[in-house]
Image (cartoon, rainbow, N blue to C red; front, side, top):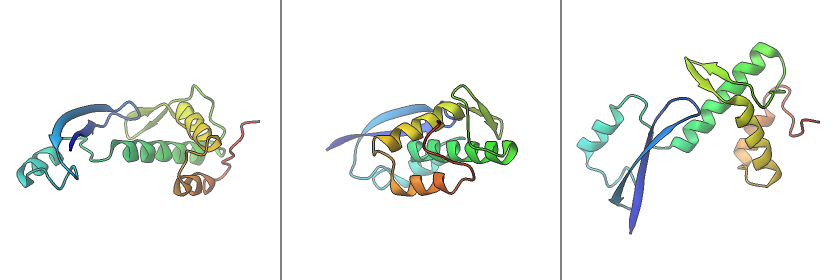
Length: 123
């Protein structure tokens, strides 16, 4: 089966994704070891851009709550974490939408509910 191997160069929530077509069953397992080393040496390399993006958003939310004392992020708010700007307001809105549609994994529901002041409704 031909699948796409995707990787990204992290740039906050706006991740640049680079893809190359390779025949594989598991992205990392079927790439030669020397290529894995080369890829992992690239600054910002990740094997799982979606998970990394989620974790960056979660870190930005935690930072915001620590500073502001609440989790009521306005939709236009941007948060800078470790020098990278994150569209936190948009990220929070997307997580609430995912939850309402039943598309948010239980572990992510737990992550968010563990944050002081988090609510699923903005009303």
